Length: 267
Image (tube, rainbow, N blue to C red; front, side):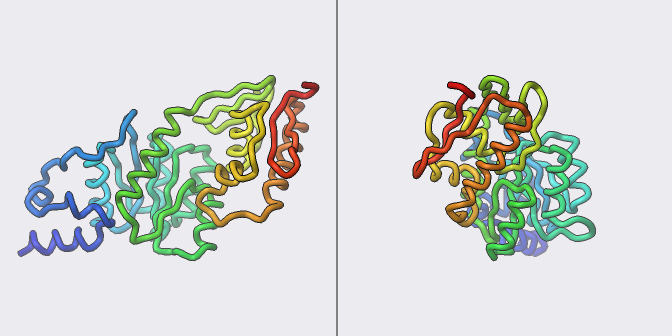
């Protein structure tokens, strides 16, 4: 009877899609889950930050089945300490955390400490202002509870594939290091926001070619409401100013009605 109640508790809190592997005999005996639907290419290491201990354990087991090792913490202070010390590929971060900083504050702290782990916010807060707050705090992605476990895995796989393809891009005096998320001019790092870096990296990847407004929006605002038409122009203006102040020979050209192009000065 105790085992049955425990199993029902896990099932009630499991993300949709986790229940297919959470069987009573295997789970309660503590056996390793079957290794199906594994993430390809490289070993991804994840930190789960969830105050509900049963839900956290359920998520850890689901990730283990997909071949993703995960550590678990239950409050914001431990999350900051572990994420800073261990170099996780991704942090799955619940917003509503007790006894200390909430998920938004944790994410801001990680970014201030230059922790570059990919942050996925998990929360029951579904209003657009809440999602925007999460993304503005430095999160890379946002899932609203209840979420489909298969979707979470798909996003982790997509990120893994993208990071496998990340590279350093050099254009004259400008270096873009996508893994470290650093842009430097003549070896001096630029102070860029998350969106500014994403936009500049995309332009650098396609140097000499036009990147459309739609491509820029998709890169920097992919999980947010569509920005107004003038917001891309505002960010391009900021990037131009920062490149000029850094003394870079790289310039951003506007292609009216289409998008932007990155070129060397004088070319």
